[in-house]
Length: 125
Image 1 (cartoon, rainbow, N blue to C red):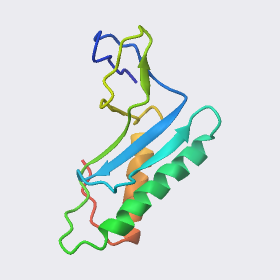
Image 2 (cartoon, rainbow, N blue to C red):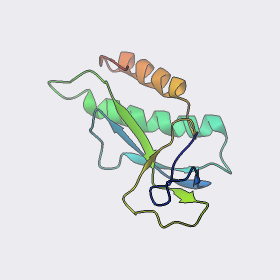
Image 3 (cartoon, rainbow, N blue to C red):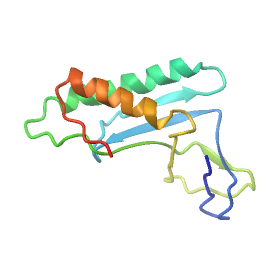
């Protein structure tokens, strides 16, 4: 996946081998809506289990809302990227981990499965 550096505008951004992933769904997130990943020491299925657990925590919380909008958007992002040119990256900058850690298909599958479990409508594009 091509991730362009916000400083030098080159295709030189690479995900670090470990860091934090933030999960936002329908522009809402839990205060603790994040988890730590370790790409070098963790198997793919273990990373997917971490994502599933975080999305499930959100769905469990969101299912208690009275007026729930259908799930239509999500962001799964991390600030833990570095530019191979050594550019300084703003601390508040986050980059999508879709196609880096997780495929879009896996994320959609998790969201649809948990939508059924918690009776939340899903309207992903």
